[in-house]
Length: 145
View (cartoon, rainbow, N blue to C red):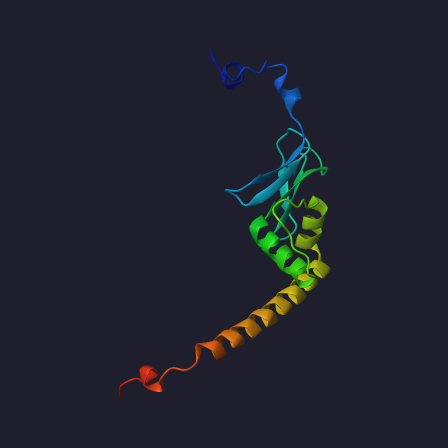
C-alpha cells in the first residue's frame, strides 16, 4: 500500500516531529492563522474577525485565526495615514498589533476616527473636483411630464 507519507518522501516516524509552528496567510480565505501544535483543534469565535483555536482535549489555546485581513489592512492603512504614516509593502506588522486592532473597542474607536478624517479629506477633494467640473444644463435632468 502506498500512502501519502510514503509518496511524499517523509519517513512516517519523522512526520509528526516535522511540524513547525508558523504564522501563515491564506489568500483564498483572507485569513491569518498561527498554529503552534500539529493537532486537530476546536474553534471559539471571539469576534467577527478573531477565532481562538483550542487543544482538542482541554481549553488550552494553541492558535489564532484572524479573518478579514484585507479589510483590517485597509483600515490600518487609513488609520496610519491620518497620522501621516505610510504603510508600504515592505513593512512588517506584529501579529499582536493586528489582533489588538481586530478585538479591542479602543481599536474600533481609533479606526472610526481615522475613517471620519479620511472621509472629510475625500469630501474636500470631491468639492474641489465639483468646482472644477463647472456646470451642466438643468434641462438634461428634467423628466418629461
